[in-house]
Image 1 (cartoon, one colour):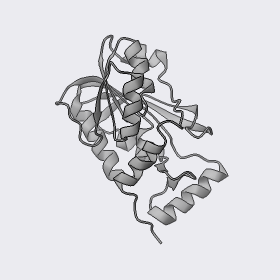
Image 2 (image 1 turned 30 degrees about the vertical axis):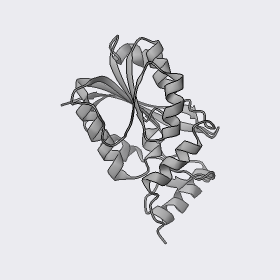
Image 3 (image 1 turned 120 degrees about the vertical axis):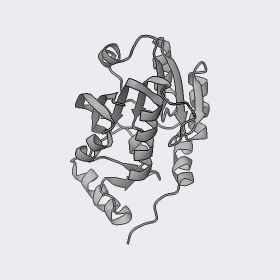
Length: 217
């Protein structure tokens, strides 16, 4: 039987509870920054978590604004990167059109399990990016180990969406079919696409996909 989709408040509660217990590690390679992030660019870190990358990019001289829907994550982010601008929002951003030179979303799509909100996020990113602006994405595609395949099968039975699954500690997340993932990036011209190894927030080794695109409006 299909399980009721978790509400926004249920998803936020999980990330609130994780604000001081999880460690995020997806990198933004320095070479990518040098190739695609203009010096002094205004950068949006959407789904900033506890502010790890907002701090890093600010230290590199970028002007950083950041968002998250978890109040506890934002509280930590403001401590870690107090010079950055923060908003509690996701699928409706509080900035004008054509505000940012660069936007980053790092594992945000994993934490947003279902299609509708993911598509809303991509639409908002395109709206607030300047024409020709850079989008950097690092996220998790479908994994091929037996343990993940079992989770996907169980998640499909519960949610009717392959790749969506429940974590042992209570969260609901998503890994992505690469065809769907590239379709989701359809508002951008692909500049780079590659896979790389990461350690997940729960300490597991996984394949990640890294995408760099240019806003084509």
